[in-house]
Length: 68
Image 1 (tube, rainbow, N blue to C red):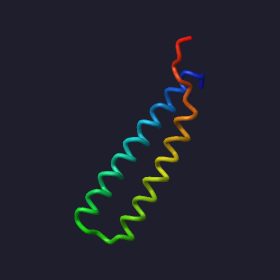
Image 2 (image 1 turned 30 degrees about the vertical axis):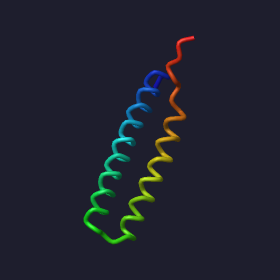
Image 3 (image 1 turned 90 degrees about the horizontal axis):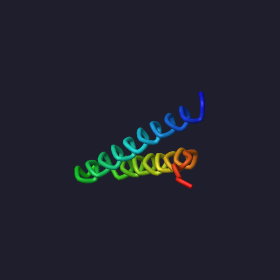
Image 4 (image 1 turned 120 degrees about the horizontal axis):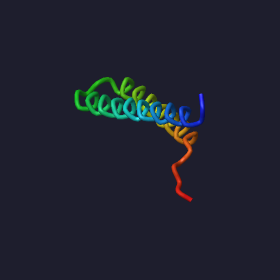
């Protein structure tokens, strides 16, 4: 793969991770509204935090489109 393809793949992965993070956020809100087990909510929050870390890691690999 060339650099452009690598960057495109990273951007796609980043989009997928962001969508998964948003899905977890909505799931957590629904669990809280339904008064689910606090331990289950805490586990989901931990997954969401791990997802955020993955987003930051992938995002840091993307070369910004800077016009010099």
